[in-house]
Image (cartoon, rainbow, N blue to C red; front, side, top):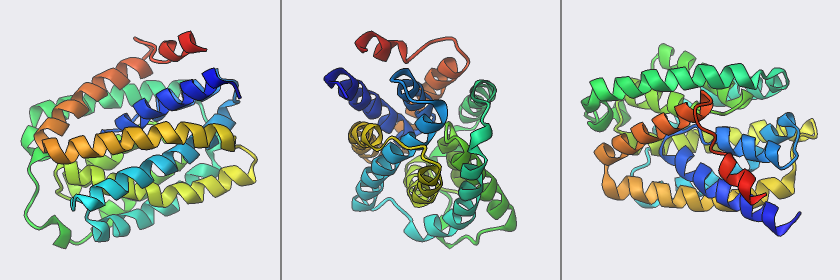
Length: 260
């Protein structure tokens, strides 16, 4: 691996770790960069999970140190998500990435308007959400989110945020903390599946993971210090940014192509 490749992986990782921790969709960038550097799409998909694992270790640790992580609720919600993620990882070989990116781009635009039209829902935490019981509908929702997360991971953060905020009653800061712990818990299991199918380049994943870790630490620190309303505006900006990329209006990976 050349120094240029390592630099590209770390820089991309910082951006991806930041975006994934505060919102989601950063895997659209990391997958594109890994493919740009010569990995087949299925290997890029598996390799990306290595960096995601490292990223969420950093984010979870930081959120927990700042006492905004509801570990109990995250563990309960993670059970159906983990089961779904294993199933999703097994069906990942049949990925149609171009169509999926367009669908996610449109969904992000809808999510953007939901955040504009009902801001209080995203920044005000319900009373005692920790004590709310998990409904059967939530179990199904998080199982389906898990399937998608195991399948390709792009945009799964937005689905988790919506589920945790709109259904579980957390504000965006605490929802992000729960989100990264759920993803941290399901990622090792999907990694095993990709490893069994020889679809992981460990060196690329570990080096990109350094950047992901740094980006995640920065993002989680900003979320805790600035609060839910600031995070809402930042998430809305990231949504527009990522939707434009996924719909083909801008090409974020052009930055990294110039470094190659």
